[in-house]
Image (cartoon, rainbow, N blue to C red):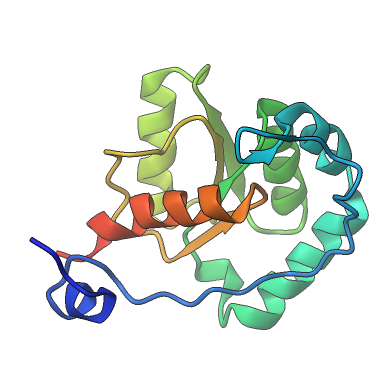
Length: 164
């Protein structure tokens, strides 16, 4: 079966979405490009620990999201350190968050997803999990700091199962 985007939304296979790009001033020109994206190690070194960049992202969330304290979001990260850093920064800013990775035990992942569903968490920042085949029906926001093509793939993966 082949459907156009709007037909897929009308049929309930996809949910409508808005895309916002946040200019954070990060200079990516010095990064290596490998296999269709920035080298993860280079990108990780550049953005993990960049408090000014996170402050801009948080300001954008508060500007664009009507009720940040009620959102249920996924953030796609480039490394475990990056996911943990982002979860810590968002939690410190009053948006309770959790980092998940392939190293997180399955029971903890399930518990975190349930907490997001119940509104006990605002954001789950993940790396190498929450990809294809994971159903997270209550997510209403997604953010990525990876190349746009990967971000679109992850958003598609997460948003598609939401409409039933």
